[in-house]
Length: 283
Image (cartoon, rainbow, N blue to C red):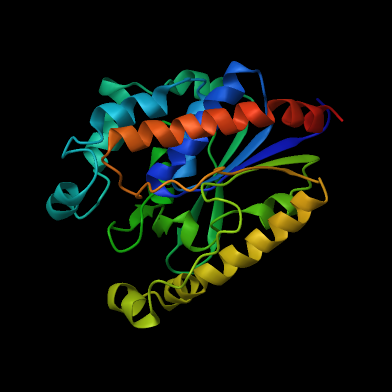
């Protein structure tokens, strides 16, 4: 393999298990990258690539999907966060299914988690070398608006990186990578609609007008990025992995059969493209 290889991981809540299937397949087949730019669930599941824990993301999601203390309405009502901070970022990573912080730290892969600064409304790309020390950035990247409290880090407030830069393709182009692999969690041709009017954003974030603006423009940024990615893909400049079929998986999915299925699709789609990926990386 020659040159710098960068991997981009889109978010999408539990659809991120598609990416987990791909990452586990990468690890099993010795597909290595130099840098990862990951958004939201892409960051939360993608860190297992840097910690080299094959199967971890699938394992704990299948086991705890229906645990009221993991994520969902109960957590939202009792803590103000749809993703339970104490369960997900303390009990889970230290006790129930330990994250290998040491292996993560020793890994040469540069890992960037994308977060959105509420004050500026802009994306920040946080390089995380020590997952234990900077775990709050992972939490911030995956904190969905409207159903999560802003995460305060160093006097800044952050939420889901997917608001400001849902697929950081342009950022990676600026970084001048030699090879780029993009992992999306929506099928070919998907384009985002503007689901939340400005008044809805203002209802929640009237103190943060730049964040409101970012939220209102989210669909435009996403769709422009998809147009650009598809152009590069047609010219064989990048590799794109995306679901080969539409799967009805919710952001907070409780059906473990669906979770297993979206993971399995990631594995099969990756295996089907494995030789092409190798060829691309080696040329």
